[in-house]
Length: 134
Image (cartoon, rainbow, N blue to C red; front, side, top):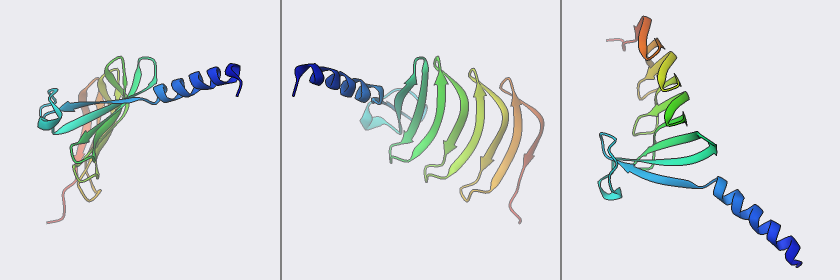
């Protein structure tokens, strides 16, 4: 094969793999960075584009704990949190690191248990809490 053809293919393959590279960071229950052996959670970080990252935190079991888009180190956009069994626990949105808009919390069976709005990281308006029938 011609060397002129091989060199561009090599660089194309290298940059394709490097753009999808992920790294892991380990955390304890209080989100302090620790070794893998002491970890409760771990995080994978993959770069979508400059200064913007889709970050997924996992329980040590491998199930998702939470996932969000981060811009310049702050959550920005959709935020999802999960129970350690894998079910969705809550969903909401951040703008520049502050909670904004409608947030919902669910029980482990997928039933909504709380719903309300945030504005600039403060609860606003009426918050509804849903109770199981007794």
